[in-house]
Length: 315
Figure 1: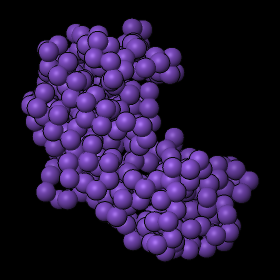
Figure 2: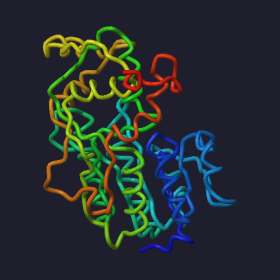
Figure 3: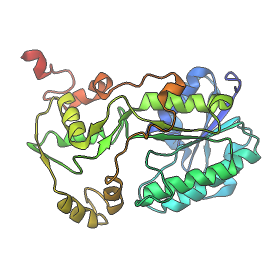
Figure 4: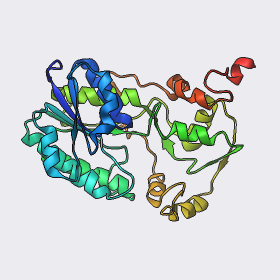
């Protein structure tokens, strides 16, 4: 185990949705964090989470090897959270991840954590799933003792999942794309704790792959219904026929399109843990269901705002 009171953890993508919670989890252990971003100013808001000198930022780009080397210099552990849905996915998910892992090993880091995704597979139909799978292979080749973390869809206060669906649920009719596809939504704080633990304790978690799914398996229609209910909305849910959704996806290159062709391909596979790999149990974490935590931020979608009583209370 890395000495938590003196360890330095470099986090690529630390200012993002998942990254801010990983930083929070690490700082609570006493570790120092170095947040590597193309624009370090994006991470300034994290500095108050730590003590004096506990949070540092550095300019780094996974497409520029020299900046990666500077970012990992002296680090005890390195975490790569960077993921994109548009642009050159191979450059970021495969080449960038491999270079970060190689640089971490050359710098003498004890741990490397690659955050991938359930469905990552070099033979996946979607570019996202395929490049995430190839990225795992590149990381393993460069840093054999790396930890691979594959979460299902992630929810939390700043997400683009529950907030987007709750906003759409204000409409009288809520169209549901891929209504039968299954997910295991993961609370961001639970995921962050697992990632932080893997970085701090490579002797226990290194060299393994984890699939992290939440406690509930929900079909897309069920997930939409639950989010709408937690936001105190009651739209009519209407399943979008697959041929219509595929047609919309074929126009995904247009501005404002609801989903891309690659996202449609991803929705053709369930996003649930296989059961063949360890999960949250290995970290001693009991994951929270969406219903236990999401009202904290979905209350703002109620009629009258977050402080308005829910309709259930008036029943």
